[in-house]
Length: 374
Image (cartoon, rainbow, N blue to C red; front, top):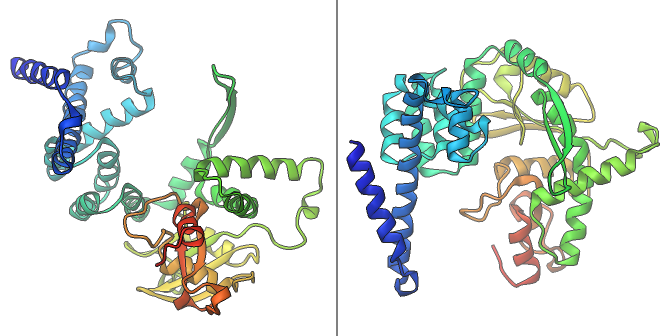
């Protein structure tokens, strides 16, 4: 087996040394790219599987603190990622379908972590998660896996664990950049994101008007700075004349009426993840939040505040478009998404649900400034 791997590596080295990409046709470049993607995934799978055995045979004793430190040093990845992959491969022993998919290169490391972390709690979800991993985006897989984990775990225990592990730390890296890292409960995170939202809207509008393309994470960083500047030395109640934090809660009507959640029912803050039913009830009692109650695939009711686009309509658009840009294949982070009139307002396009759609900043710019249309 060792000789086979060495032979494969040697053959790949020869191939890459003599690879002339400029001579490839469109079809050849597409096919070759996909083959290298598959090779990369299979290499990652082999690395993780052998890494687990290296951990068990104490290879890491030779100058490393732990198996994950050894893998991180040799793979040039973070210790956290190495530790997560060791745990993933260990748990995968009880998930043969996922194990086969991982070995065949059908799953990336990120996909494998999501599938395993959920399927180990609910084995019945394994096949569905593997199908989502194959056909949909990583973001959708993360969302579905999060729902499976939430349904399988006791929320109070999960909440207490997240609260106990909460932290916020800052430091300056070797290039002089200010860095932030943190962890908190989903409910606390929902409040933070909601407070950032009005600043995010203002900054994204300014970026759109200047026609300077900026990635959504960069704009989110600008929003955090703007929020800090605005709140400095100002009493909290003087920041805004009205409610400024809006948490978008999605909740199954049946669960609310019953007083408990069943597997498969939704109780989550959009963009954050699942929360407990009691926390959801507290959100619904607070006028600074908005709730979308769902019944199957239908929107049962919406409670919220008004904007230039009525808030009930705004929240219905987000719910209908599933917090994604409606352009097929677009998986842009939803932090910068905007609601767009399909038929523009200046062309007498009505502010009605059928004439509104959710677009990311890039596709909104194409439609607004470059003549594209839905």
